[in-house]
Image (cartoon, helix red, strand yellow):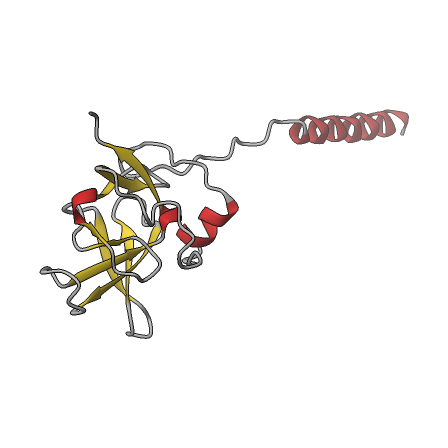
Length: 159
């Protein structure tokens, strides 16, 4: 009987020690989201996430890039993909930067569920950029990509 009790205590002790060791293992490192090019995405602020991930909109007239007149390239704030050239930017007086053309293949158009508007997202990381409107007559291309400044960064041309 004593041998059975000793084996039971040894088995119970071994079980307790095993569970402590299992709990002490390091948690798996959280995977960093990657783009299709296997590059890490930029860390976003809460405000950037609200717009780019949760498809929000920044207040009109408040964006840092709204009145930018420099020559260069507008890139995705999340993944750094090239989106627009400064030559395609125009003043639409809508409160957000407007472009009548995107860099080929850089922007995807997705009809909104209600059918009223067409969302534009970065083709590389699918971050929300804004909406596209057709037929307004602002430019000869008759297209207005209305983009949240917070969704982009600007890289000036080298002088």
